Image 1 (cartoon, helix red, strand yellow):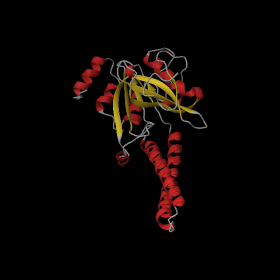
Image 2 (cartoon, rainbow, N blue to C red):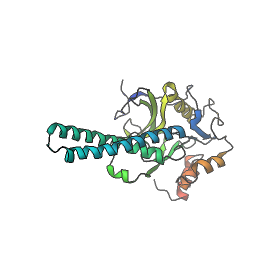
Image 3 (spheres, rainbow, N blue to C red):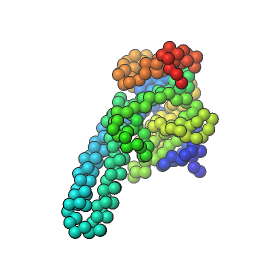
Image 4 (cartoon, rainbow, N blue to C red):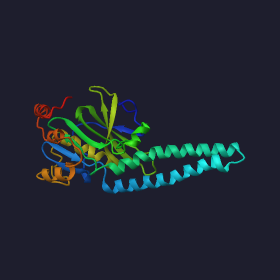
Length: 274
């Protein structure tokens, strides 16, 4: 049975159900939680360093390969043999496509700061992200965006419009990721995607989804002290994780909004037009 969220996402395993969930675990991904909001890290430092290293090696190997293929095609193929020319052209195209895929991965890991936290406010039902534009699994990109490696997207979403799915990465290690499908209100039409919990083994890919759902439902199955920072360490959390990362001032204040009315007042205070 395919996903009900369309268009279908590559590598789809299953749609996730919202609501209270006994399959829950904050793991090291939970940074901070209080009665208003929680913050999850989405990329651990070890994963970030590993994939940065792998993508850098791939790029540094492919660029010289492309140069050699150009030389083979236009310099060394003096007899203009068609077989050599076709092989060189096909290999060049494959190398180009590989670099096209590796550069976003390189940017993603190089310019992801402090784990790219995602913020959930259960009092207003809002979700906030501040992440590298390349922090996703898109394949088709405008090549011009590669000239802006530090490009960010900073957005506010409605939790009601976010729906979880699990996808696999097509590797021999069967790593799964949890994706938030951003849908048009009251529809299953997907208009955006947010990475929630990338690259987990098996059941681990469901734990953060379970914790977030319990938090948003005000379920007693979770504890505010499950994260790296305890609930009374909000100032320290914001100083070490949020400050200096380009979060809009109104958004940081909105983390703690206790109602939609209070959120509206914050936006009015900062002249934010929706």
